[in-house]
Image 1 (cartoon, rainbow, N blue to C red):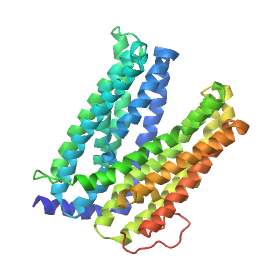
Image 2: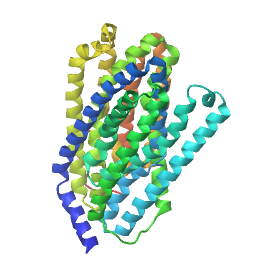
Image 3: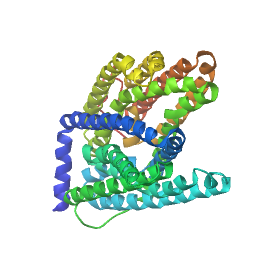
Image 4: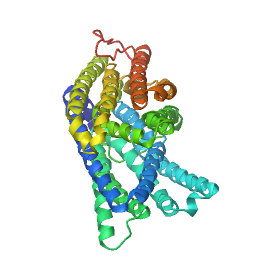
Length: 450
């Protein structure tokens, strides 16, 4: 009875793919934009409370928590979007329950291991655990498993098309709780230091992940129900580990320009460039929202063997993503003189940098959701290889262009690398799955996918 109900629910979701995906994408985009706006104000407030030195320590710690926490899921967060809809569409609820429990346990174990390894490396280095980073690093080791678990929960919620439940707790609620906890701590006499901010992050993440887990478990019980669990470790690892490698390469791709620019240019130039990237992120959020809303639907459509629905969903995603990316990009450039001026009058000089970065993002969106198809339908190793190659290309272009062009060279390098990555993903998706993803493709193959 439970299996039949769940299978019926899955096909009901497939019947509403085209109507549900845009709404989910809008929800995700709205939450991410609201979270980004709040985060900007929150970080400005934290910097004023702590001062430049302590805030710098907190910011560095937070970046490492984010990178390592996301990596500690070993790809099972993205894997949830691939395997859970597929198994549900096949009526294999034993495998669904097995993945849910195994993924959570593996994420917790891996995150604890990464945290301990990080502390071990810091101890071997010596100075990190003897200076101002000591207390923040120790507290961060406690934050890391909670962060990783929340990242996994986000993937599970996305797999069920519960966009608000997936995105709101980590990107909005957690941010609000961090600031509230920091203000309360200072109000009751705690010093405005980095370790206090990281401790507030620990409290905020704990509350946010608990509320998200309770809400998610309640909905999963209704959707899946109790029963036996079946684990397919070999199949899961074969898909998820390359996804994790691709995620790491993508994370490096997103920061390689700032890292290389900081090596080759003075701090003032890096500041101008970084300000432009803060506005560009609103344009990038369009792709994030589209992926969060549709990637798992690709897997469900393939499992239902509905090639026509899959091809139409790909076309819809490509067209809407390109249109929204272009619209938001134009709006960002139009508002740039005002918004960049909030950083300081000199930051208005970042407008040409922003224009080049936005052009690269728009160009990449021309090629459609090739990356999502490779990740969700098979081809994750090829996807990771393309991302790694794009990282190398971006790095080489940065080293070639920055010495002569400065920040404009970094922007041009990333724009070219982003467009090349989008083209390569589209080409790979066409060859592997016989589906054309670019918006300029007038004929989408509706043959069976592999």
